[in-house]
Image (cartoon, rainbow, N blue to C red; front, side, top):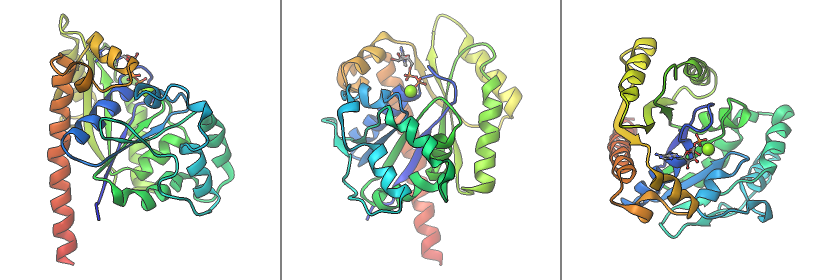
Amino acid sequence: MKQAEVIAICNQKGGVGKTTTAVNLGAGLAMSGKKVLLIDADPQADLSACLGWKNTDALDETIVSVLSKVRNDEPFDPKEGILHHNEGMDVLPSNIELSQFELSLVNVMSRENVLKNYLRQVKSGYDYVVIDCMPSLGMLTINALTAADKVIIPVQAQYLPAKGMTQLLYNVAKVQRQLNPDLKIGGIVMTLIDQRTSLAKETIEAIRKNYGAGIRIYSAQIPVGVKAAEASGRGESIYSYDADSKPAAAYAELTREVLKDGEKARTDRLRSSGDR
Ligand code: ADP
Ligand code: MG
């Protein structure tokens, strides 16, 4: 039985590269031979679209249908809703009904745990689960953070990126205290870097100054590259669309870093279960 590491890609700011990172990290992990489930946790369904499912409103089985069953404490088939991408990843698509679903959680018992309870029954089939969060800190994002082993935060290189970060880190700390003490911050990944400017360096310095030297910033830095956006338009990862592009090299490096951490976490887990 596999023991999936669950990774939430999270930042309440839109347009920072969350979805592109989820797609290309997921595809990179799958290319490395890992069994991967990508979860679209955004009613905009960008992740589904970037992987080629452009009209998910027509689908009966989605994250909404399975999570509704979990919310109602009804049984579900672990395969329900799961699509398979030809690059090897499984995908749980979303659609616009997810907004309504989020609102429906208000009066539900254990409403922060719905995604976690879903994954409890599904994740033994995977090495990695990657959750693409929506640009808010609402109940769906809280669900993702509650279900996750770690959060990766894409940050766009720009002046004053750090404003929303305070709120995000506050929410992560609150989830750690109240809902998921095992949640770790994997790190910050710098995205949309324009190599003609020194913004990335300045942004990193600002983050370190404001949030301490302890916060991990991945070595992989994702450059702006039109190929990254084009690949999404084609429903492919950057490796499949243009393996020689700079974003492909950067996402491959991020994948290696995540794999290295993941393998270490796995041996630590095995060791601690052996000690008991
Ligand atoms: P988010 O999920 O945080 O809203 P996206 O991943 O959807 O961010 O990215 C926002 C926009 O920027 C999309 O149109 C996407 O195609 C584009 N984009 C993302 N990463 C890159 C990149 N490295 N180079 C160029 N365009 C990118
Ligand atoms: Mg997105």
